[in-house]
Image 1 (spheres, one colour):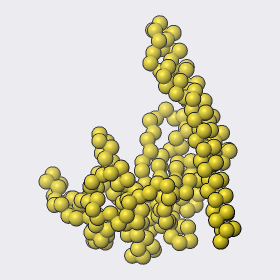
Image 2: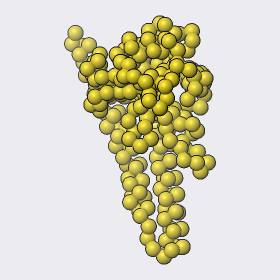
Image 3: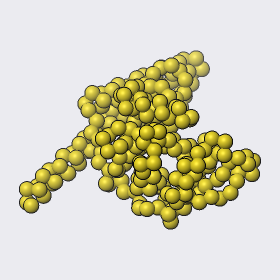
Image 4: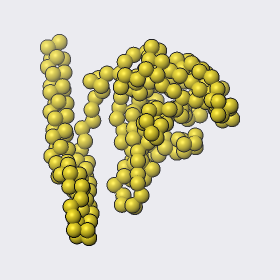
Length: 249
């Protein structure tokens, strides 16, 4: 993505535009991990849609000021680059540096990865971007042999400021309205798979392998409810315990 496209995403978040494209999860501090779709994933345009991974950074007033586009290898799924962008008026204030060190890099390496890789390009990467990478612990590995204008950087696990802890993240509780939308989407998907399976069966006189997917989707509504109520119960008990501790003090 270009810097202009990243700026448009940040502006859209700040203006609450096309929020159906964003799935956001706070991971600590002022940082949110996100899946972003080019279009509303519930649309029926017939094109294959896939989400792109991002991190979005807020300032102390809650305004979105920065974004990190996570680039992944299409075959291995491993992170192969980070595109960093901060709104011009919020640069050199530590937002990106602190977010990378405290939350983003630990979150990216929560699977036990030993290294992370990214690149800069002499034609369009700014000197500030290169300085920032080195400040947070990336080391220059050398030039890309196939693209001499590209410098390869490596971040080692030993340079992590801290480890990411999932249990310290506070879950959001989805509204009943959103839950119903998710369950409706599961029913629609099940109906479509049923139609596809029966169409193939009627045309070719044999059963197809879509049945297992249909069975999984039949259980999706129950799974959605179970996950929701488990989280809601956990949140209730956490609040109750916190209230009890405050009372004891």
